[in-house]
Length: 431
Ligand SMILES: Nc1ncnc2c1ncn2[C@@H]1O[C@H](COP(=O)(O)OP(=O)(O)OP(=O)(O)O)[C@@H](O)[C@H]1O
Ligand SMILES: [Mg+2]
Image 1 (cartoon, rainbow, N blue to C red):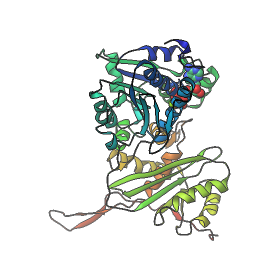
Image 2 (cartoon, protein in one colour; image 1 turned 90 degrees about the horizontal axis):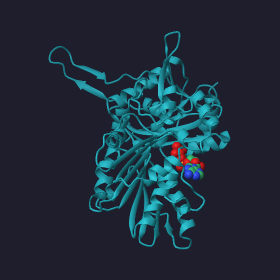
Image 3 (cartoon, rainbow, N blue to C red; image 1 turned 90 degrees about the vertical axis):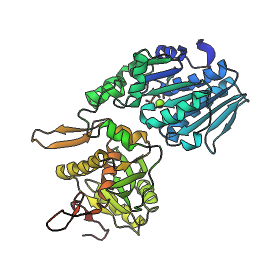
Image 4 (cartoon, rainbow, N blue to C red; image 1 turned 30 degrees about the vertical axis):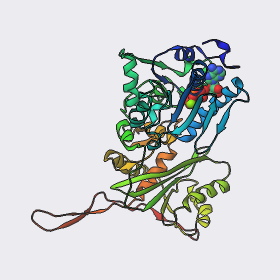
């Protein structure tokens, strides 16, 4: 690839190797900040430059993620084809230049793409999209066009991305695979990497920066469980009860809000967001905006530390709900995470892909304190705010009663999973 092809952008050695392969299926396992998104944008531009016509689809776990790549393609294309671009933002981001079309969708579309063809499908953070998006949507779109598939991602356990990556290593025809650690990029400073290495666990560093595929040993949530929970479309549930978990950021942490619908036998994550704190007033307003969409929801907040004071700001903004607070002790936290982990284990919790939540789940680890108690935490650098908010939301779900008819003896009603009442009802008038 001649250096001057994209003005003001020169691929580094690793990116060059990726861009020069003519394999039909490219699978690149990258460390954070390696330049995946830039390399994908360059790969799309090269297809435009090297072919008379193309239809290129960008997929990523969320539309926001897909838009980051789409915007980079637009930036490159504006430099190369000034005045020739037609860019649309609705109903989804799309760009036309001559006989070329590039469009972006999120990892939980699917049905709408069936039957469409593409000459190139690019999946950014491919390890974090549901497998069937690649096997049932992306690959069939390429069948009649004999098109190309490009998968770039940081690893996520030994999941579908790893299996596709192995194909390149095992010499399958048309496959090309490579591991690209972050330090391969000259734009990632040694200081930044040294700091990360200090801050996060050895395992998290090996995965996120070394681009190593590691299984879920030591992790609370197993890759296969998280993968089974991550769907393109959420199942339709009969239970319309909604429960909301709020984890307030301490220091410069994020504040997370997660909304789930259903009960302990089957629940969907229907909303998930986190914000870095600017000031408490605007933050509580954002939380209230989410909560007020679900007037009958149960709302459970982490009351530990500053939580108590923030709840006092929040309560008046949501007059229809009564906030419940949970003070974390080592026991309540272990119980809370246990219940969440049980839902994953039983395959009763479902969600659409959310990169932040998936990363937090992947790196949520258990460490043992000298006292022998388990200490649950996300390993540094990977916040656990969304995981905690999700666990609080799950705590608010009802455990349905199941009628058990004993063959003999007396009949017995019991809960599938007892809920211990550890929450306190909160009101602003509380002494
Ligand atoms: N060849 C290049 N020339 C100049 N800058 C580059 C190049 N490749 C990447 N960068 C810059 O390095 C930074 C990281 O790149 P990019 O966002 O593509 O990495 P990434 O691997 O997708 O990161 P993340 O893990 O955050 O998704 C960006 O600011 C990008 O513009
Ligand atoms: Mg990226």
